[in-house]
Image (tube, rainbow, N blue to C red; front, top):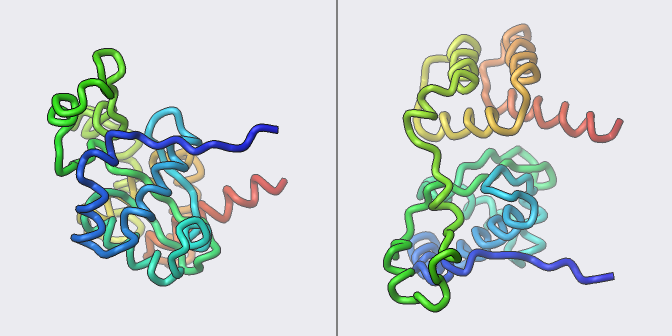
Length: 210
């Protein structure tokens, strides 16, 4: 049996991100970020949502669970990832690396400085070259339906962090299940997006066990 191997985009290590995250946030931020990227690369052909608990990240990075939670919140604030954090460190969090990812050194600079590592035809940069056009996102009818469900169930408050969580819902769960969770929240007079996401995760986990 061959040992399981991790994958990681080399360009990110050369982009200045390790130093930026560890100095702007704190030591350990790069380790947490890198672990999420490794899991994403292993599980998803293109950037997508990763489900990892804080406890798993703690085990894989050697960083205390409370510190991991703080680091994830800072990474979210610095807009390098979108995330939903549940109440318990044992529960799965939803994590997604931002695309396009803003790095200290641009892909063009990396191509120029490291042309032997990234020759033409092998210079694809994950998290940069797969960005979704803004107009395509604006025309996403499914996303708009979920936003409307949020306004009708939770409230009219909206900011970039709330929208990021709604986008996580849009790409992780089928629309029919999303509608059912919002309807359950409304029926029970629960005005909490956090509750809706936890309900969706519970239902998804229950489906895996059957």
